[in-house]
Length: 298
Picture (tube, one colour):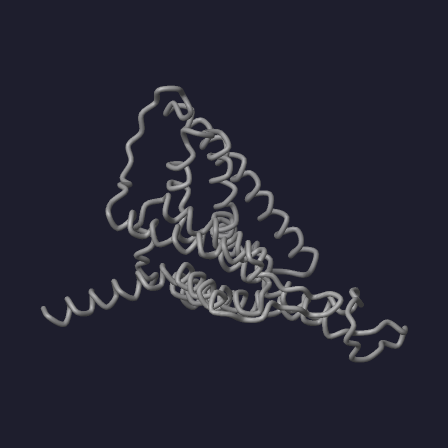
């Protein structure tokens, strides 16, 4: 059963502001303090949103990706001054290249997990609400692209189940028959995708989407809770940007690993970053506690 996410009920502007900065920060922060914070919170939030499906995705997809990235980088990058040992071909394996590979692998899976959270919270309706009047054509295309994978996964599963009922799925017959059945499923999926794209275009055109002066009904209201959240996000962003300016978030891997000496300002930046990332989970936990309190009193 999917858990009710309180942060999803906030205004789309608040959601978009949060995920845009979270993903941008995750892409550039390789710091040994900031990167684990982002990864842990991303995993926690993803599991809260998607449950067991997210756990399976992290264990069977993200963990191998991290290990693969960590193992491949030292094989091709031999920069660094701390040589651990030499390969048979004479190339050195350095501590710096291993640490950099782990950091890049952690960054990659962190960004992917945050994108999975984004897809669960930022629906296509929210995206079109934010950018439909500014860039109507591009916003529609982007909203369709962002929901491309989950929709196609659901559709191909439906097609496979239908084909399985008549004995034509990829698990029936010899190898040649399986390949033929797989191509048939793929052909059906592509046909469905093309028809769906045409139907979407015709539907939006008939509604006057993108026309000047067109009005639109919206269920979203920017209330006091959204104002408080946005204020918290902006304050945290200011401290994080100050940390970026002071190079608090920077780590140098080559030729040797170098980090700025820790100070009280570092602690402030790390705390601001943690609060910024944890806000959705804080909202959810607070709401869950309120709901349980109400249930216990009735």
